[in-house]
Amino acid sequence: MKQIIYSLIFLSIATVASSQTTNITVPKTQKGVVTKLAATWCPFCGSMAWDTYKTMVSDLSSKSLVMVAHRSTSSRLYSATAEKVLNAYEPVFYQPYFFFNTKLIGEGDGTTGADMQKAVDNFAVATPVAQTGLAVKFNPTTRDLEVTAKTEFFKTATGNYFTGIYLIEKSVIEQQSNRGSMADHLNVLRTHFGTSEFGFEVGSGTMSSGFFKTISTKTTLATKINSANIIIASILWQKTGETTYSMVNANWTDQVSNVTTSVVENQALKAGYTISPNIVQEKANLEFSLPKAGKNVLVQAFDIKGQVVATIFSGNLPAGKHQFQLNRQQLSSKGLYFVRLQVDGQFATRQAVVQ
Image 1 (cartoon, rainbow, N blue to C red):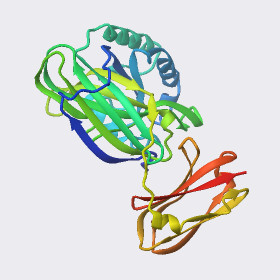
Image 2 (cartoon, rainbow, N blue to C red):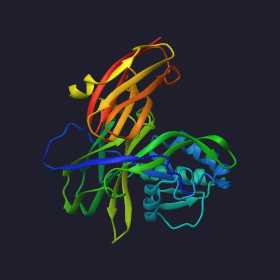
Image 3 (cartoon, rainbow, N blue to C red):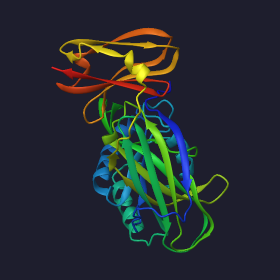
Image 4 (cartoon, one colour):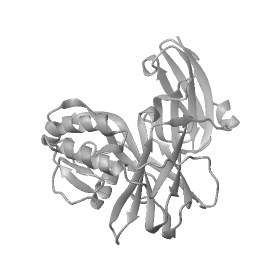
């Protein structure tokens, strides 16, 4: 059975004309992509190939984006993005396999590591045609994750180019055959931004040196995902056929700036929203009243850093009075917490002090 372990709700995409100035610095670097094709049920993926990949993450991450992709729908870490992006790679029919950019390198045996190192080093010394600079902002209150990507060409190029933006989790604890139920999967490809797995068009025809285009895209990060545990990566693709692409360059960042925006509370909603007692020793009662049915009701507790520490309710509710409990066990430590009620985009927040 396909297991859905991650979700991103796409909110909006906006492209900015290439003439618009931006503060993003685009590095003149040449970096490729190291990909391990794996599945959690695959015993070979959890044997020698597991250790080979772990070494690659350690040794190659300064020169290349290193990630693992699960395209098998029966893998616990299946990703629809991985399945479609891997269509651009050399075809293989099982796993594990290791690729540099889209080219097959090996199966993770004794020679794969050395062959991959050579491919990475050779690619890194080439002069880049273009590269992408990234800036990432996360609003812990609304959980909006916004990525701005500036792709700049350093020399004249002709073709059809796309910048793909991808979300990778640094560490995911999940079952792996031959490794047990609590294996630490590193750099797992999860999803892409936008409507296409290969990203946003940044240029078509002839682009002269100095041409650039800036793209902004925003999503809502699922509550189960920690913003400190993500990598945002860009892959610059050149479309070479109707459905074929080749990798041109890659970049990534795990620097996510936390931002806050003023959220105007709904005073009518807040007036009927109470927490008692608001000095919590064991539990507290949350009560609120809805004048009409709420299709998207979310009750969450945030710590003082703005991180979600507990989701108390998520779903639909009819009109009328409602009551939920906040238990001391749901909160990590003593201190001040903010318990936010969200109903169809309207907000109300109450404070609770845990002793």
